[in-house]
Length: 88
Length: 232
Image 1 (cartoon, chains in turn blue, red):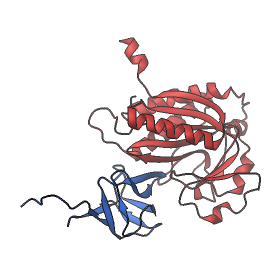
Image 2: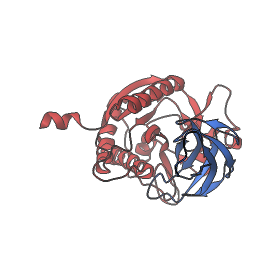
Image 3: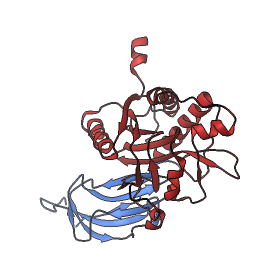
Image 4: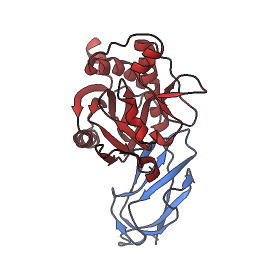
């Protein structure tokens, strides 16, 4: 199983932390590449965090309205599908 | 080649008076053109019919005095509540922050600083209104540090590094309309306009047609963005 951390992105050199505005997914939800997972805000700029791959949300680690540092953990997701031949 | 130089620069478009929902639909379409077809950067200048818009994080307590005749829309942009209406020049920016000269990385904050700089330059050059930014805040202010007056508000949204939403410059709106909200979450913010600042300085304000104001503002905006590497 490959789990991936979703973290607070750095939107600019001056950014040290951001606010999680809301989740667009719940724990257990499946998502596809390009789906919006969350919205964050830093310095009057909103940014949508988009899924870079298909997967399932395992754990939401940050609550809406709270601040998180750049690279701080927001959620843990599982990459799907886990089919095919595993390397090794 | 002069022809090539003439073609560069983030291009302006003037939409005139437009409802909030129509403006959102056209802005979203422009975002798709930029994302799917690589359309060049643009700033859309317009005036809204009266509306209150709130960023995602606006607390309900900031909206409790809104008159019944004022529509309220939630806006997926940064910032809190603001008022838009006639006499205010809004600029919606659809610009790919990745398309930056040289090795510069996309940077939302530098983009916002460039927007503030463009508005400030326009106010100084065209109206002799000196302006400043405030540490930790977003927008453009004038007046003294003890009693700052806010003349322009900014709220940006970014998806796939392409911006939407933008700024609103108070040319001569009915400033009393801001009193029914807590503008941008700051209850101490006094709002002002170009007309009011000219009157405070004892100068007459002769308003130009809004499309000419937009053209003047755009020249300053384009230059400020180009200096930060956003050339097209």
